[in-house]
Amino acid sequence: MLIDPSEFIGTEGITHLCTGGESPMLKTHEDAVHRFFEDKLLGEEGRRRLEVVSAGCKEKVGRLFGVQPDDIGFLTSTSEGINLLVYALDWKPGDNVVVADVEFPSDVLPWTLLKDRGVELRIVENTNWRTDLEDLDQAIDENTRVVNVSHVSYFTGQRLPLPELSDIVHRKNALLCLDVTHSAGVVPVEAQYADFVVSSCYKWLMAVHGVGIFYWNRDRVPELNPPFVGWHTPAYLPDWKDPSAYIPREDASRFTPGNETWIGVYILDNALDCLLGIGIDRIEEHVLHLSTRVWDGLSDLGWEVITPRAEAERAGNVCFTAADVNAVTHALEAQNVLIFGAYGGVGRARVSTHFYNTDRDVDRFLEVMREIPVTRPASTPGRDFSKAAGVAAENQG
Image (cartoon, rainbow, N blue to C red; front, side, top):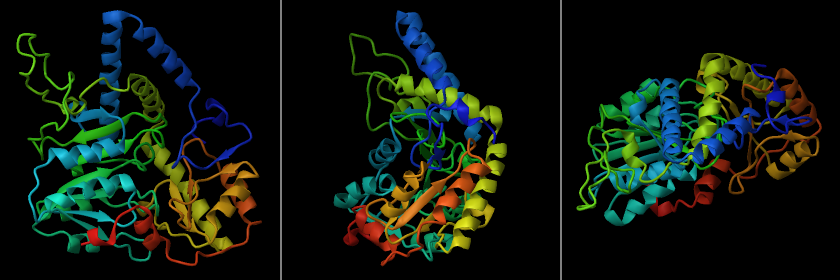
């Protein structure tokens, strides 16, 4: 292990293999929350302290992503980041957006709002649970404005190669929007290959709901005006005599119209101290060792594993199919083993290992799985998912 499980709240007696859904909370988060409470009551000095913590947190996100902190903004969620782009970019009839069929709804549904403006949503189907770069390449044409995909799939666990993906998208003059919710904090994220990066923070980044990351690659997209504005948007507050006159901030903070979720930023800042202190390379090595054991163990038991086995093509998620996923997760829960099950009634389950997990956790998981009858779903989960996500067939280009 890279950190003692006792450093987390409430993990005693639990085999926690569901960071891909929710992470446990570091005990030191309580100290971070207490610091926030103390700073908040200090008036103007307290506000300055909030801003100092936020700036420091953005610097740490920049280190994690390999980019400048000024290109990092804090929103409330991944969904907000995608919706921001829907309204910030200029669109014309005939444009299209390309997504994969195994994407989370937050990376798909916002783009459907553009249908009435004549923008087509193209959904690339998986091939044997893989999103192939060749298929993405074929879906992109001269009218493609944005390709929105996940670095690591929440649904299959597949990790896409960023340099190759970036080359395919940019060769056709499209913009790459990358969701790193399932890679940030567990494997290296080379954000500079994308035009925009979004991430939730309550999973592998060990923080909470209500704070999300938005990266704006200003070198590639120098002009992007905020579609939603507030008192935090201007570089300086307008004069009271003319409150409507303002100049937006030059950095990514222009996309945060009001106060950040300060308490969430304090917690994220504390979590990043932990993650960066251990080192993402060490975390990746540890997690790939554990996820390999999960992959091999499930396969040996006869379960259909849909995550690629090659280490370069996965991270912390290992996903498998079952006829009744709820029966599997409930059987595990009865033995205090926690994984994440179906989404939208789909027959796939997900095992997620992180830096606090151990070989004993994997042993315990496989021990319980040996007692559960192996099954297969009656239908193809990937096709069911595209319907469960609410993406109408008429939107598939």
